[in-house]
Picture 1: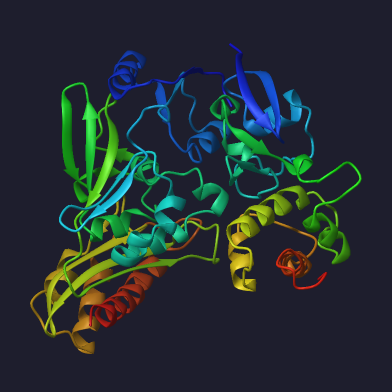
Picture 2: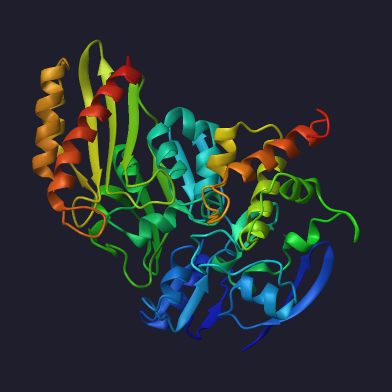
Length: 161
Length: 287
């Protein structure tokens, strides 16, 4: 039986009717119409479905939709400061070639956002440790790490990457 | 995922009554990082899912110099990982959660869930057993406390009755000059299940080993103590030869199976290697 949940997604209060056996990932994509969050493995290994739930990065495939009552969720769609502007992470992923096929990118960027929120000046080892749950089969990770390092420098006011 | 009926009890009493009424056909949901995977892969098809996250009082983590560490059933492995007191007093446990899944997983997965799932390879079990942890269990007849090393009865099997749940874990404070280590062996650095896990808690008095507990993961149907290895070390001055002998004893106490991650023989061999390393590191830390 569907339950109606109230949840804030990307700053917007939403009311969604969800079946208890649907994952948050399916709810975001199919009920909330936010298809930026990707379904890769659907069992918590690949990280493509990473969203920020009450300030913490989680695999949305491993959360039930009914569990997020009254929670706050940020997805990749909520990252842009305005319709024509990109978040520094998005800009730097473009600039440094951190995205190739792009399927892992929303999850990687959300994880990177959470990482920088917690640790604004991470070492390369800390970035790689933080991204352990995000699989990318294109880039070899080097360019992803460079894009995150550049963003950290930029946000810390050390020039524009 | 199969269709199920979903409950959010507000109290422990309500949760236990529900468990009783569901008659073994319910799964408890805390972190969900194991349950959801098993439901998606059709390894479990519960008729009922009981989310215990609305029950108050199980989210705390606290440390007291006399009572030690206590944390509730809803404390995530990430909260344990970043807790300064866990890093300082229970470094074996801190290391184990650091190597459990990814940050995304650890932000949901609870340590109590890792315990109740009772996987022989679960990372948190060896350090919890080596550190002398106990589980507080709530059921219709009231509460009971079980030493964690007596909690596991087989792969996925525990002493929990169908209408009982674990509410809290307590771990005594470490005596002065105690070294605590967990070493995980896997095929890759992250997002890996342990091929072998070795935890040790070792206390020195002068140069003598006063107390020691060694717990092995992924080499028997449940996590086990290497009691013969421990007895070789206890009340002895530890030198390299004794460490070799104890490590071999631990190897002989392990009863691993061969599976997709490793052969049984390789596991046995790695028990010896990792136990040797773990004892050495624990002695160095305790000094």
